[in-house]
Image 1 (cartoon, rainbow, N blue to C red):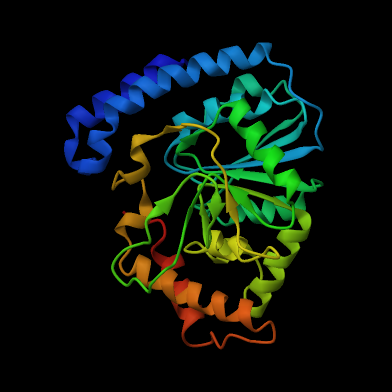
Image 2: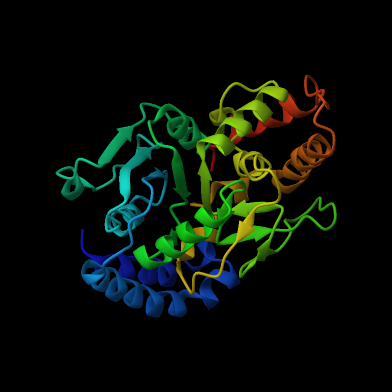
Length: 306
């Protein structure tokens, strides 16, 4: 797959179907096109960069409705010599991912699901792998190899908490909308879009899931980012890695499935409050038999509609 057709596809789609792009997405479309060209130049330049020797890193990627983005994300992370494995799970059997050119690289592995699968499954894959340090990247953000390397260096300085590039701070209870995202250098309550963790954090996440009566991350389609964010010894950290390229379908209503689910933000707020209480009281056992389990199950039943 070529890069320029991807850019033209995004821009022409926005012109033909403006109703799919909220005002925020349409305002950013031309900025996206400019950034996309810059990203491609940086991706080509990375081939000449000598990256430092770092501990092995396993990359976990998920595809559902943005399959055209994945080849560029895969190419970016494979440019890092310390990346030991890239696992891409195609969670939507109705769509195919064109990654044939990476199959010759022994570090790359594609897993095709036979039925629609929740994005939380990516953490189940991480848990089952042989890796010790993992970066999980959403399919609507393009990070250059240099940006991933910078983020990884920050993680290695403080590996006891999850790290990323964007996050939210739950300052108040919000029933109708999410807390606004933050970028830069700071602590946050919840990471978004990029998650860098080690196996210790991952094991803590599954311990917390067990407290909620859940057996794997695929059961938590609505809030796996909340669970991983609460699995370090403190609050997650985000870092300034420079401007990245955002896919404009991040808020496209027929691609960002969560936008079509009723009570999405209220449900996340409910789960957050349980996690916050558990952080303050490690002996707290959430009674989710009626409340939270029903919430998560309801989200799972509607995850792939729309």
